[in-house]
Length: 272
Image (cartoon, rainbow, N blue to C red; front, side, top):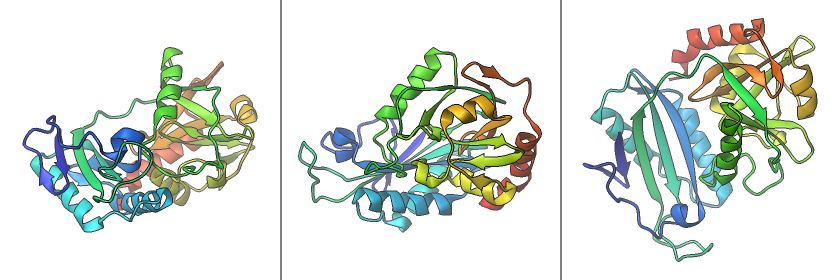
């Protein structure tokens, strides 16, 4: 692992480097991006940094200093060649008084690079009982306030699943804790709209562009009961077939899923 904080590559990435009063630590006042690294190069870094800026502005933070963030990315990737890895870029509100109010000392910017194992060939998912609030102040923003996702994923893992799927407050399918969802219904590839409250995933956007599909909001219960195929997409999963969803199982990935995976594998380098 290699870490860069506020302009400096850390000699010891496990050493203390962020103040205990940092607003990202005390109240989760921050945004982040996870970026796949392939053969030492960050995949789709531009779209990820665009979303980082949108998330920061949506949270009421200033837009991150993009050249500074790019400096951090270059520093950690130069420290170790990663055949397959993951970048974590985090921007917080910086040091602040304890409480919800922000301070005035400027943002904290952290970039970390770690090796990453290939994603599993398929996934099992479960529906969790807690809804995603599509009308909440942070809906659609990639913030560091991930406690709801931690609880949902732990619930899924206790049931032997790899990911948790959430409905929104009206019962429509929304997203996973760290993934977007595609499914096939009536012979058509579909994914929830951004109005559902799901994150505007970079992988989601590329799959829509490269593989087609339509954005449709539908009740999670109907999708779970009737979809002929389901797959997850994310920075770390790429296109990952779902072969179990609650009590339903599929023997193998369907044709839409296989075609999406093939298209992704062929075109992924274009995303750099």
